[in-house]
Image (cartoon, rainbow, N blue to C red; front, side, top):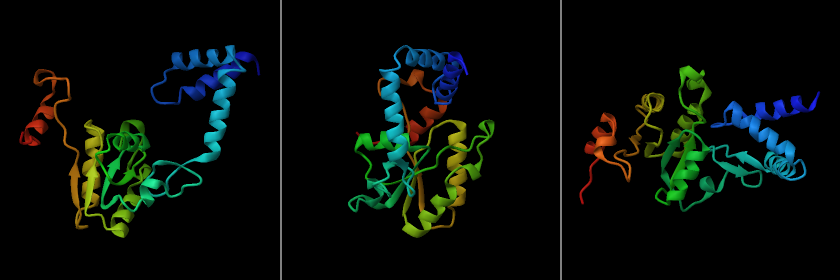
Length: 200
């Protein structure tokens, strides 16, 4: 294998990450090659450490370590165990935790139903969610999925699966983003903003 073939392998691997296109992956691979004892060594070490120590929590799907299975979010007795927040992936858990506004349990689906990307219900952690609802006795399931068509379809599919299980299904409120205005919002956002209005 010649030098360019090694870089092609690196670029191909980097290109599988979300948000990194072919050209960006190639530039990153070349940059790593310029400083093999700098960034490449540091990145290699970080990736090895993560591969050995980082895991997904078997209950909620959050990022944790080998030493903490299940994760702190699942074992913390002070969290509200009557409510579970369903998210698309672990990065959504991190985003919600940063707000400090939610203190319940989580469940990451590891995707959404997306026929265009070849992801169906069988590719998601839906059975694990149903088992948790039955076993842990959640009183409310909050859908914290996106507002695109595929996320909406996934939320509706889950609501159908959970029908008759004596659990309240809710979704995050949505409305006009901070710093934006009515004239810049789409009809669905405005409709939800009006329905979800609050007293001042």
